[in-house]
Structure formats: C-alpha cells, structure tokens
Image 1 (cartoon, helix red, strand yellow):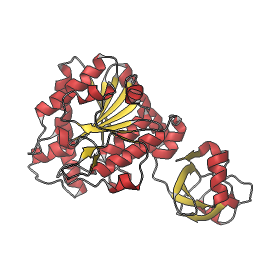
Image 2 (image 1 turned 180 degrees about the vertical axis):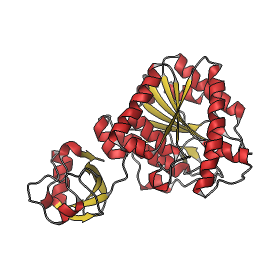
Image 3 (image 1 turned 30 degrees about the vertical axis):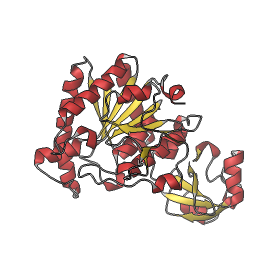
Image 4 (image 1 turned 45 degrees about the vertical axis):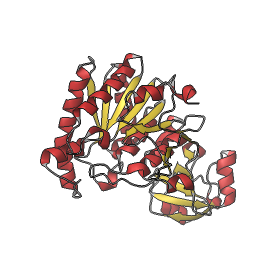
Length: 358
C-alpha cells in the first residue's frame, strides 16, 4: 500500500518540527537543517514538488533573545517569532542556494484560509511558486495571529496546507520514529499503519514536554484526522534519520502511515469541512442523520431537535446526532434566530451542496 500511495506522489507537503530544527540551546541546528534541506532538494531533483511547513521561528527567537522557556505572553511570543523567522528564512535561503533552488516565504493566518477568496488566492500563490520551481516555506504569521484566530500548531497548519493544494502526501518529521506502541517500555515499537483513529489510538498519545514545541503527538493525531478525511495519506517519522524522506516516498517501511479514505474530497467540500471554526451546532434526529448520510439529502427544519450558538446565514455549523457526535458540517442558509423561530417545514437549512459528511 505504501508503494501504491507514495511512489507516484508528485506534490508533497513536509512539516518540520521545532525539535528537528533547533538544538538544546534553542539555537538553529545548522547541520541538521542542512541534511533536511539536502533531502528536500533531492526530491525536487527527481521531479517532485515539495512544500515545507516549517516550525522553529519561536525556538530560534528564544535562543537569540536568551529565553530558556517558551513565553506565555502573546506579545513576547510574537517578538520571538519576529526575530526567529528572519533567522530561519535566512538559513533556508542559504542552504537551498547550494542546490540552485529559490525559496519563497508564505506566512498565513487562519483568516487567510477561512475567507473563501483569500483561501483561493493562497492556493493560487502556492501553485504558482511550485510552477516556478520555487520551494514555498510556510509558517503561521505568529507576529500578528492571536488566540481566537490561530491554527493552534504547525501540525494542524501542515494538514490544512496539504488539504488546500491538495497534496498527494503529508510527511510530518519530528523527534520520534512514529506513533509508538507501549511507549516508554522496553518492548515499545513503532505502529506501522493506522486505518482508523479510535479511542485506543487517542489514549496512546499525549502532549509535548518540549520547551519550544507545541502540541506533541496529540496535535499530530488531529492533523492525521484531517488528512485521512480529505483522502490524503500522512506519515509521522523521525527527522533525524538519514534519507528518511527518500525512504518514505520510495514506499519503504518508515514511521507510521495514516491510511486515508479512498477518494479525495472536492475543493469546496474541503474548505467547508476543515477551514472554519464552526459558529454553532445543529442537533438532528436519527431520521435526519440517515437522510443526510445515506441518501444525500439536504437538512430541513423537521429533522432539527436543537440549535446551539448564535450564527448567521452563510456561517459554518456543526451537525450532531442524538448522541452529540458531530458527523457533518455545512453552510447554514438561515440564522440561528430564524431556525429557533421555526421555519416552514420545506425550507432548506443546509443544502446538500453545502454539506460535508465527516
């Protein structure tokens, strides 16, 4: 399956974590960055387009500013990002120039991908860079982002970038060999592949203890949840292993592979499903759930049992079954007030063309 999914991949997103880019002194680890850049350049040389989602700006800024721990105050974090991003891009430019390859910096905020026109513009920019044989290097615009509008971490950002393009595969390179079974014990081993993210998988992971990183394995599992639903395979592997990218894309057993759904989700559906913070929730009965999931129907008022949150016409809403489990998202055609005030039975609340089954 790895060979089938990866050997013909032509567009690859690679996420580089802070832990594989900086050393114990919170400084950029130049030899490590050099070998990673060499690997990316080698993939470009054989005809693959590689997009980098790079962490490390805050970590590099911490080293420059003499901070031992990741700041908690927003302004201090943004100062670190401003200083570190410059150092990070300067290093990338120098290293890629050895391979006669240009780089382009792309800094994104959540609003850039939520707003539909800006979403399409961001995609067009990335595609044009790739067509010009330029390596896009993407990071969140940490100097202006704030809590309510942040992606949360670069694992999630990398999944959204892979979904935006869409990519053929997402490779997340980190400080571990993959998702570990029996982590911390002598009999621990890498889980080769995961077809479904169930309770057992979620219980086996945790957050990060790093002073510079955000999210840890929990964030990577959430990223995998996005890519799998979008129909894009994802691999978690160690960025410290020589030729790791070549081995993965050659279909060799490396890291943990998350097996996607068979069909890639269409562009508009991806935008609805993954690029919004839903503004409200519609709870539906079993009959409505079956009509939406199995028969491709639109959501009508009689199937709605409860409306939560304040949202307007055109906002993305969660759609949950009687157990409270989200199974779909869609664009509401009426505001929460209109829905609560009882629409006519045949009025469409969420049209099937604006609905995504998760």
